[in-house]
Image (cartoon, rainbow, N blue to C red; front, side, top):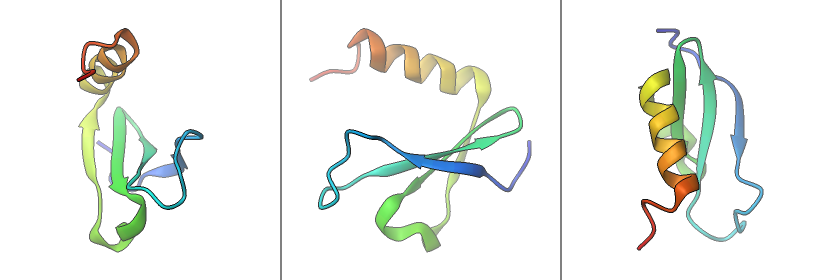
Length: 64
């Protein structure tokens, strides 16, 4: 898997004063990092697992 994420983006629904994460593209997956602590690094997620996570979010499956 590619190790240098590109095209980091933050959700348009994020409030500038709240906790937030950014997602970057990786060949074969995605990378996730804390917006307020970018120097701490990121973790990588394989493409199929990222797709499952996004689908679960969209379906409301992870709502409290």
